[in-house]
Figure: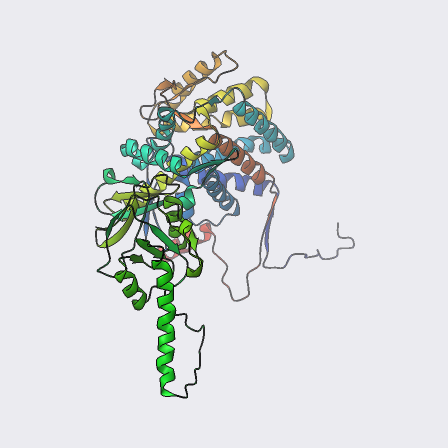
Length: 550
């Protein structure tokens, strides 16, 4: 092969490890399956929680797919890309992180048998792609049902379906109302464009203490600040609010500043200049007769004195994001220089400004706004862990409500849509990866049945029969699995429905990840520096442990 018995040529450096061919593909598939197995018990209303400890000793208790995988450290590159898809799903649509991992793992496993039959990965991939296109067409066409955005009961039902599988399922009524109110508050429609920016304008404030039932959504904004001077008013009705982005104090030099003084009066003059500067700023503010002044920078003692005499409450060092929220809530404009202040910059949309004490801290409420376009969600709970989990669940609910607003179409839940899509795909293909992918979709109803302890084989067979007997081509078969009991149930108008956007994203992400991992046929692990100790493989670590025990 090398001609004349010459030594083989080494292209890669000696420290580099290279694995290629069938072995890599099967390893990738196994890695994907293992990640899916970790998450599998977290699907459905009977989901188990996972308790994770981070290296710092902090604890996370959750059944949110993305939160679990974020905390797990893995070494296998294929497993890392599986974790990445949960993050993508969370950022795009906010819900379905668990199902996307379970589906991707199952789709990889479906391709394994064809690799054993020596089928080329590109053939498998081609059929997977074809199946994905058909799925998207089916979902956007006959299998989805339109919904009226203004029908509050129908929207609440969909959000309840999302919350039902989470920790806050017990307080679903409160959570549903909070989610829908928040989304309706921050919804902006102009020129036919709908914008729902939850991240920026729906702030979640977590305050330990009380119970989850005490959580509420404010028609306005709350910030963790107190007035700067104890004598300032703490309760003002119909306040005139001014928002500033400049400091109400004398501007100091950036670095060292040298001032040469010749006469003794010069120093007094310097102090007077500072005082005049602050007085001018305060006079410009007082001229517009605001009741409350919020600034992102500092307020000097002198400015506090002037403002207090004019009966104005001042709050300083606000976050930029909080300032933007107040501006949206009360209709004020943030001004960068006091010289540019004018009447139109004052916000008069708020009905009440008050400072309240919750626990140990003071909070500033700006509520009873006439037409708030920003809101604060106040979460109470017994401990930090409960609050964190409640916030994660609520974010999912908010995202689901947002998805319906942006794309008002629904698909039946409880595994019904997966079975319906699988049934349609199976009618088209008789063999090969296309058919295997259709069967892989059945993992969702199967896992739901498993998690509530039902007989999976019997339940799935009955469910297949229901879907096979469904003849109407223009509407989806709505038979699915009741996640609580494991019984078959028809998802009628008040059953479990999910937003189309979530399902579309789940299928696209899962199939594309399976395609990506099947396409890999070579893994080259980079070389370590001479001094570095190579990371031990799990098998080697076990051997070492056994030797130590012996």
